[in-house]
Length: 105
Image (cartoon, rainbow, N blue to C red; front, top):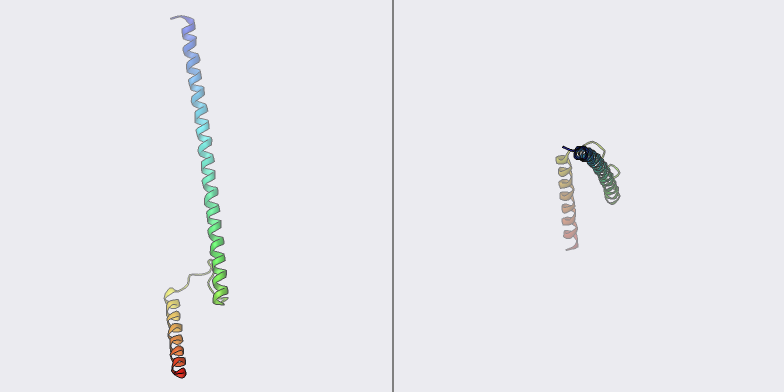
């Protein structure tokens, strides 16, 4: 084999190895940036969700007029007790409505 052919082989091989390393670095950087972007988007979504829940809690408390309305960060509420209280209130309102209707007739 001639010397120029051997030199060409090694130059080609070095070029291929260099390109492979550059491709690996570029791919690693791209995946790193994608990971950062995903983490930032998750944080933005979590923050947005928290803001929406806080705003909804404030609006419900304003409409209901109950400052004891549970906030999103408070202890869990006993749902069955809440349902029972609401049913009792509905029954009381029905009774009062029926009494009002009977008086106006």
